[in-house]
Image (cartoon, rainbow, N blue to C red; front, side, top):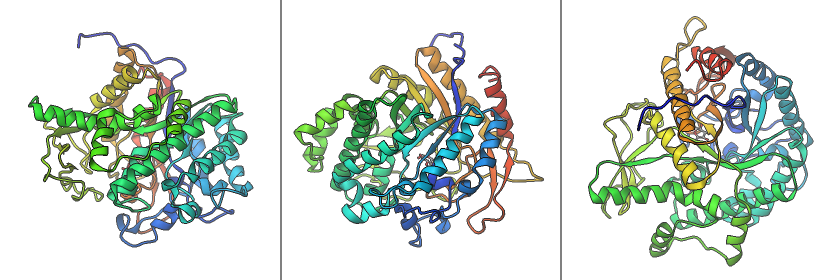
Length: 478
Ligand code: BG6
């Protein structure tokens, strides 16, 4: 591309950071909270790294004032957090737990006290166990009504102070892990059930957005999508088609539905041929088209590189790296469609995730051109080991990662993309669902590990101060 002068970040740019209820709150059975599927899932030995769980997590439920004070010290403009459905509705529906509403009211007020804008995620994977037990959660259309009723409670309670809402966090991830890989609850491995559950989640997402509009609530709403952009390994025609398969399979299959209310034709035809396409009722398309988002939430961590994969080729059954032992990820893909291969141009983290700031620019440009929507970057960050030494954490790799990704955002803005804000993942260290506490993402180190909660003391990492400068200069220090 021709060399161009970078356009500055807008003065309203939301420099933020993010978390999710199950990963930070703890207090899993306090103040009337009901069980979520994650509270239940982690009790089974062998499901997570060293059997880690979020029972205490980083105790944000009790320490949120300390955490928000740190956010204020850093100068955060926005904080994205999720609401635990079963803290508000212990049975997923019915009686409201006032103490649950109180907690989030206090958190929102505390943020606003420091002019930090709350960005609220309605669903970040912690489905009430009661709904899983009653009707199999996302596999039943009953969830559409219950999810909408839950969201309306939140809109009524908080929309006087919340301007940005995230409907579903990473539907593609919780559905694929939950129903294909079997590594998240409900730990099913069945593609037909996966595509049915995914379609129902699409309907629930649209129903909540529709209810938001019909209720006349102020503010904007959209889903957060885990976009992993793909590149063909070379220009061999078979690899080009494999990459087309991947793009449809991993990106358009979700985002086209959010924005256009329809599935990409080629992908749907493939699923129909395989006998695993979802059941689409005539009224579904209307609902999908009535519940389209105001913005696309983008969670970006890495890109993948794609090659063709024969019918008897690799599947997703290979070993994944949840331990931080570099190089232990096995090749994976969909037989007959594509497989993921190494990209010789990109470095990788200890968890084998590629480090590719250019991929973020690619995502932003593709979303902007294909969907003509503004983008709120709802997650981006580096999961790594960190070492606490004399009260300090020199996380230069994280600074380099975030720095290069911020520049990629500025390049995309210069390309013409409208970016509302940037939430890094994460503010404090937190529980990584399958990777325990050793895979750290925060600006703030929390002194605990899988074996002991210790005192959960907070320490500011070098990246804390680096981001403080970025925010203060509105990106000019980059
Ligand atoms: C996203 C999720 O998938 O990535 C977060 O929305 C998650 O909840 C983050 O923690 C990082 O993934 P991981 O597996 O490294 O914790």
